[in-house]
Image (cartoon, rainbow, N blue to C red; front, top):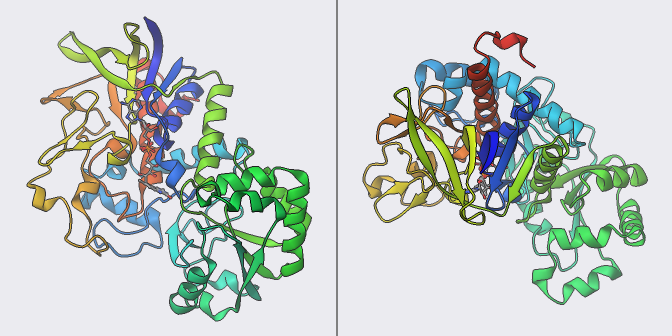
Length: 446
Ligand SMILES: Cc1cc2nc3c(=O)[nH]c(=O)nc-3n(C[C@H](O)[C@H](O)[C@H](O)COP(=O)(O)OP(=O)(O)OC[C@H]3O[C@@H](n4cnc5c(N)ncnc54)[C@H](O)[C@@H]3O)c2cc1C
């Protein structure tokens, strides 16, 4: 049997955040994860709270909206954590990523910003990476931009500048008042990728651009088509395995002002975050069992308290893993952290109690694109104030749930997935520390 202080199930943004905070506290920490996380499909920006869970209106100041949840929606994960702890968690996350070479920032006002998306719409977010232009809600910080230049890569289907240009001009005033020009870039090295469109994805391009000669040719073509007064919108095609290094180099070499947009998956902006978290975790001594799946666990009762004693995985067969504390960060339906059949929703690893789901007709709206939330997006594991779940009404005292496996919020409609994942993960690690050191006040801990 392998023994740890903490075992975390899942390696998305929630699993890695919980694991890194446990390492901060000196705990022997292992992650078991079956596969890729939602980060590979994400924008690479962190949503804190983009739309109000009460009025569903666009939110400019997420902090004041979060502080209202305590009274209006006490079951919301943010209400359980509290504004002060959420602030602490978010600034801790920023420092972890900054140390790993991916500094993420918000507007100086701490309000949400708008970012231009792949489709030319404006979408709110709270933290973005350095080469993502953070527009304030009045787009005042666009005044110094003379022209928008959109980079089109011959044969690349995952970013369509014609669509983005039309949508920006039609809908996104005042951005649409700025002249927009599409420039075509073609490298001889891309020709071999053209043959099969399935091999011409952002990660394939990033591989080609790792070659110095190809990179220089790409950089020279960009320099010839734009000036430092332009905003150059470029699909995220650099940085698979090397973080922001090549974006920094491109910026220095061309002197241009870039705005990266995520492409269709795989999204290099999200992959950069996952790689940075993974490298930091393993570099700091965390143990990562990637490509394995937790199938279930054994429970015992100690002093009348139900506890998870050990877990088994698909690959380790008879060898079980055990820890004093467990954190479930297995995600939502997308990552199979939740499973739905025709009439029921279940948490498949331990059979944890799920929030009330009602009749199937209540699960979703008739139209896919709708102003009203699809209810299934807020289904998940029901927990107490400290994110401790139950099995058939009995608390599992040494298990904590974090991230999108939790119920009580809608990450997509309200734009809060990243913020909830980070802050619940941080709160879980602090809870574990408080249990291990009940006499040390919170402020005195690392
Ligand atoms: C497509 C998509 C795009 C999104 N984009 C954004 C965005 O741009 N910004 C934002 O803030 N939010 C975004 N979100 C919201 C998202 O819910 C959160 O941001 C966040 O990524 C959820 O993280 P998580 O760690 O809870 O879950 P996930 O990222 O889903 O990770 C779950 C992990 O658990 C593993 N796992 C599952 N079951 C097991 C098992 N039995 N054994 C071992 N491992 C297991 C999975 O392999 C995976 O590694 C997006 C969501 C989706 C679905």
